[in-house]
Length: 117
Length: 113
Image (tube, rainbow over all chains, first blue to last red; front, side, top):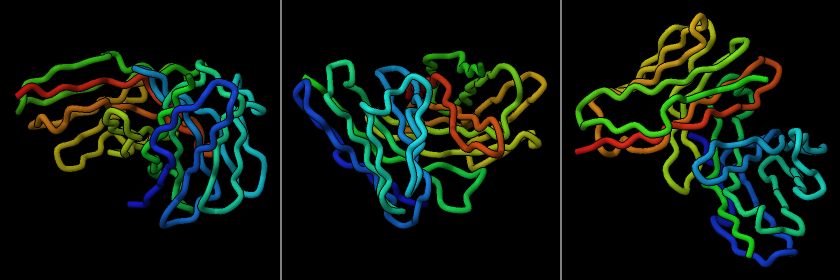
């Protein structure tokens, strides 16, 4: 199957700093990628839809100025958590579908564990 | 708003038995429904997809059913093995024009040797 790679796998940062998470589709081009957040023992919550070459679409309640998404190429989307605070500590996961893959599986990255201290 | 419930937060099954997980949703039926497996600290991995006009799908030891009248999907693992222990998530796509996945709360399955 297709591979989606996320980097880093884990990161610890100080409160007030910014952190960038990368999501790459390794063997296919993804015009759309999705970013999720997962708190312990909870399910995945969609944060935003990342569209190549255009602005991301954010879910209700997600601050777009805090969670900056850039989808500059067909294989890379980045999520930057700006001015991170301890409450932003979570597991962030991206996903993508193979083009033309409507109604098919989503491929997920391995996730990034963010801890803000 | 749409709600998805997986009614068992945790489920313990004896090795060799069939594990059955439930996913219930409210309001209108989704375009299709998927089941994913998630191991601790990892992203979900796709298992099966079933469309609104399908009743049942199988893949090796896995079987998914979809009952739009009951607004329910059942996920079965037959001849369960300790390696099947993981969290299982159902995910729904509500309409054909929007492929966002909405995930259920998940069921943590433990297969006891």
